Length: 147
Image 1: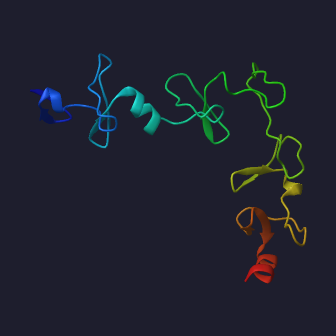
Image 2: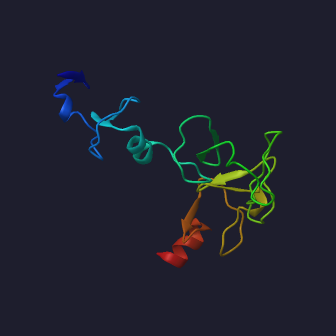
Image 3: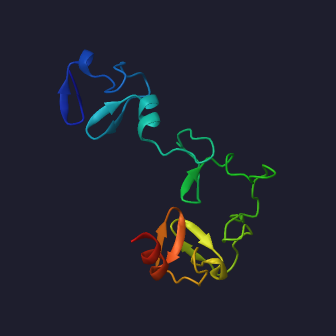
């Protein structure tokens, strides 16, 4: 018998909960009390790189609401890395990079002057806008158009 995960097992019954293969020299990984082989554990539970969508297991960068392999976090235009550590998101409501003061809403960044109602074009304040169909509206326009 062998003991693992606070239980006693026959060796022939201790295998990956997903693929059913016996564990090799690299052992097993536990998730919710069940054993998994390394390959299945990474495929099912490891965070995925925002660039290549493969599992992230070691060195990684955390940016833009996700994790990245260092080699995958490159400029979308020229595919170069960021040796200075600085990069820009092409948002802001106008397509130009957001630098300095910005408003973050619904996972996007805006220049304050471009954070406006899609209907009346009045400037919005964080916390007082409504979103509909991926567009931002002031409360009055939202109610008039959608309620």
